[in-house]
Image 1 (cartoon, rainbow, N blue to C red):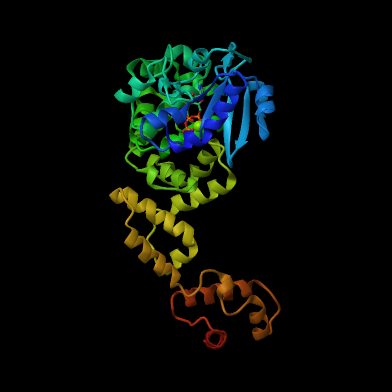
Image 2 (image 1 turned 45 degrees about the vertical axis):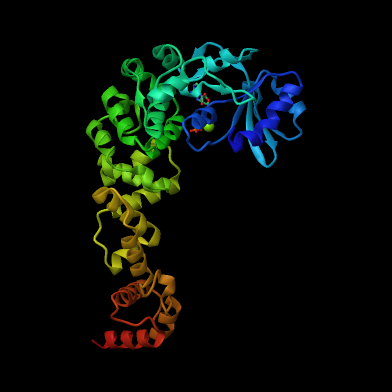
Length: 397
Ligand code: ATP
Ligand code: MG
């Protein structure tokens, strides 16, 4: 058993000691059978939430009514969820309620995809009722049970299927694909926030190209914010390796550039994904800078972060990879700028007022702007005395 599971094993033993069933479930079981890095370890048990709280000294109630308690143990936190079956679904997005059950099989049956519906017991034995391991071997994504039915219950599962295609580099089963084609409109019932979480994971996956092509083929793209008329853009965005970028704003900047969202429409497009204002601002700024010709002035105006982000995206668009040496050179050129902001100028507005002995007015910022430009161009040293002389000379001509 992997170290991360061994570390969490005492939780299973503790639950079992109290007479309950307990298993590792979900993504971690999938990942360990794919030799992928295991993320969060989730545990499922037939112990009701109150019992989980009684058994473990440190717990956080994050959704007791749905059966989820976080257990803090040995410096880690684990989601421990009571086996549950979901009642009737409302609006294609949430069950009207859940009830706690005794059967692991029933709990696994409500999970979305076969590869996500496996469990592992305390001895490391795999429990796989729905052919998850076979699908891992065949590299195929399919739902547990009838896909159309499962998408009617919760339409987000269609986007999750594409997200896992991208992350795991898997294909989509024919039946699941057909069900997406036929039920894609149901995605309209899902909140933007949930769609955004899955879509960002999709973009960051290694096979985003496959998933975006599938979104285009099935028509699912039409149900995504701002993409309804952008079939070709969605498909062609797939050639960009989003996974080579780290920052959220950069990923969105690259996406709007690849889909060819007009600069004027970019803020509204990003807002339709309900992204935070700060990310929107950064992404727009970076997107506008991708095709820029860089000189001292444009580097200064962009600032270090936007400059480097825009250059990385440009390299990825052109060559598919980031040239670290070239990037270091660009950073060096930025570092060598005589000033990085107006604050770095050797004179302030106050200095100009003293020097000129004129009442304050628009001229102060205009003069500062001229000094800034001359310093950046290397025509003027950023020293108080030199600037004063330069101003004198200017006013005499
Ligand atoms: P990741 O590594 O990205 O966290 P994960 O498989 O853990 O992948 P989560 O979104 O964290 O994915 O969900 C945890 C588990 O809960 C899934 O493996 C799946 O069994 C179940 N699950 C999550 N969302 C749904 C859903 N919409 N419908 C059914 N089951 C779901
Ligand atoms: Mg998870």
